[in-house]
Length: 213
Image (cartoon, rainbow, N blue to C red; front, side):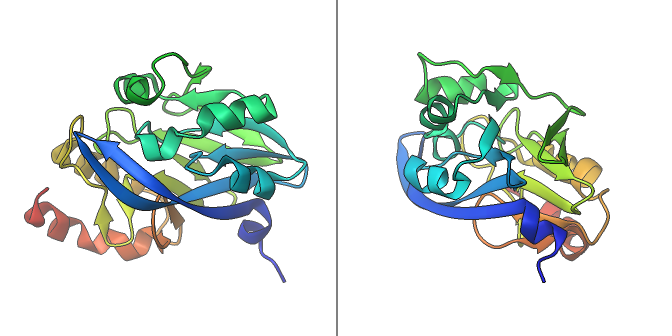
């Protein structure tokens, strides 16, 4: 029997490239579709608009929510926004990265820390977690016990901070003060790779700090 997470969260893996600082890297991205059988949010519109649209089906898309604006997370945001007549939501601190991919198209509305987004009976609370990028955001669904972390927290540690507009000390502080304060059994749905739990990652914080960026 499907649980509340299974019935409220769909998952699509798409493949493409991440491009920044003159480098291009092959990546697989997790795209999360959250809501019910009537309306949903699409979190991080990556690489393959047709595959994402197929997973959405005939449901209403309330918004394309971007955890951050690296090109592998937003390269299909305008196409899907137009296809579903849905707004694109992004923290304004991400505009320096957004403009690298979409200089002639702006997001439709801002994500702000503490804001609540609702679709299909699911509330997503916006948690601002800078570090991987200036305005990285996570999305916490308390009733599901799930947090969508983009590239801020992965199974095994924090997101990368070795490229422009990122900072290791900042991401560690975001994880320490915001994500690791969530209940330990909170499921972590990441931007790439496998899911994890807050309680599985919390014991390793000091190891990450000593390891540096």
